[in-house]
Amino acid sequence: MKWFDKWITNRAEKIAYKQMEEKEMNYINQSPKSARLGVDQGGLDSPAVRFKMFKASGGTIIETQIYDERKDRHVSGLYVITNDKNIGEEINKILTMESLKV
Image 1: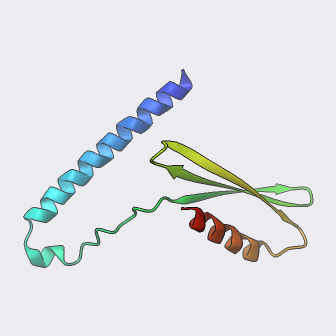
Image 2: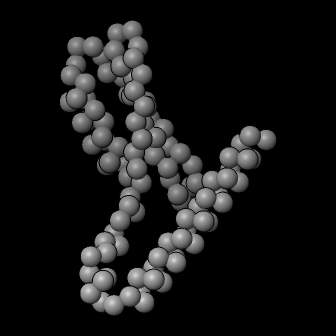
């Protein structure tokens, strides 16, 4: 039943977040025009890419995770970086690949 509890909690948080956004939008729409000029409504609409890095013998393992709202699931990806490669450059490539998927 743990999965059900997590699912209910996530749904409740989403509903609360949407209600909070609607209240903010109503407040913004009622405020004077000069106060609305500084508001960026583009915000954080794009999904976040989360990274987890694990040390392994012979290299590093990078796990990425993106939440897909349309399908209501998390999409994971695994990447292996060997010790002979530069970790910074490889993470840059991974970030580029993940941002192209979104």
